Length: 73
Image (tube, rainbow, N blue to C red; front, side):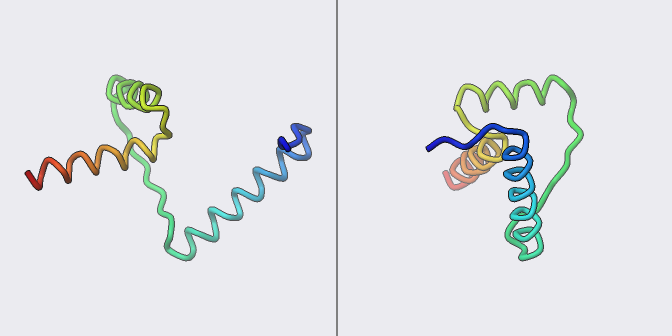
């Protein structure tokens, strides 16, 4: 069954996600990083995400894994 798209339901899901993220941050399971990068680099990053069908955190993980593989060879 799909989620309800009423304003109340959207706000409730957003609040639940916010609380979950805060809890995970407090437990040390999540960290938030912020980077200021030039627009061209950010655009390239977003193109990779779109081409791969991944979120930004997933693309960052993918790039780290590629780096680690290359480093081992």
